[in-house]
Image 1 (cartoon, rainbow, N blue to C red):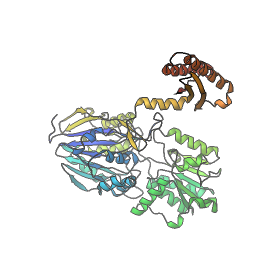
Image 2: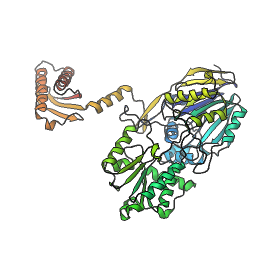
Image 3: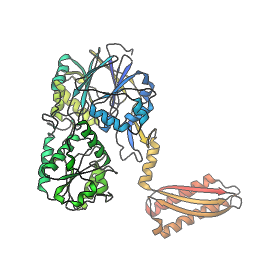
Image 4: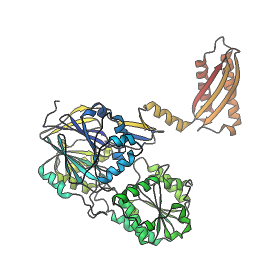
Length: 559
């Protein structure tokens, strides 16, 4: 379809059907704006994968059309892919965001000096209107679990598209920076073409509980216990961090900090004036045993059971400066991100096994979500009154529930779109239609570079993790038709063969017999020898143990 002034196109490259990986494109008159560039953390089915980012091959092809990257807030699922995006593009693109958001982006680029020096980071304020080529962009304050979150309105002659980013409706936020209801309603009065709205909590009825409730819980619990208190939360949740600080101050506790990202986030927030932390409250982590337990609070990372996070290492007994005690009270002030449930459960169990008291979950009032629930989502719809509605940010069950809410408040079913990643949806005042499909999906990060890891590779890694491997080493003298070394057997992740003498003896005997049979032939077919060894030992182990590890025979011929 030929581009013209009457149509604006929306393409979601990531974030549809999952929590994370957020990236949306707005196309108009052969120009592109990118909304967010986030990551997703790997699932259990992705062994060896460090991160997952959206497929940006379409953007690489169209990079001369990109006019800017607009960022809604500083969470990893919205900014984590920025270094990879910038590294893959041959041209510079400006990045627009609020002060706190850009500070987090700069932190991500600090170890990539070349990218940072080539990137124009443009600070915006809520209610700023910015002209970017054919687009007029306005940033609108919303509440979320990180300061300086904004919704983004993109206006063209075809109409205005509003992207909420992640949001919730907070009537009395910790920093007193309320959602800009007036501006949202004004967009609705002027006529909003399309709303792209956060669906994460669309299954939950009512309203999200106020953040201040969490501070009250901390204050009560800190004053109640005469022992140490440890709080694990997201390092970027500065309002939560501030409430931990206030609770520690009110209970006359000193505060120690553990976790690199927690240190960095607190440093950024203090420097920008988003956090008040009296210097006289702070002590080094190694000093905590010098004070009475009722004088100590520890703020740390690890609320998601991350392998290298402070609380996780402490729970495993591997933290060099912090040993969990049976008298400790530990708060997990977060809910598990989808995919992290097992890791969080493991951490809780390890802490409980050490005798500690663990307080977690929304029912204990130590966490409340940064995402809107059903009544808040309906309020956003009613304020903005969009012609077209696209639920974004969430699994398909969240998206479909959000679509149902939209129908309840009067959005026509034909004007609600749940399109897969990569679908190009063109919108005009009197028509909306899918016109194209572009490359989209997940790209796996293995190490520091973008790798096109095939499904077969992931399956092999999973098989190794599930079944283990048995390696058989042989050295054959080709000239003398003689087995001169081996078989040597190495087992990894399968069975300790040192304590299975009879099994090891049988494996070696079978391999030796097969090898001698092939050596006696006029010419050794090493491919057939390898295949017979692996098949024979695999079948033998299954008969004996009902297990089938990966068998790898390494045959070295020498002359």
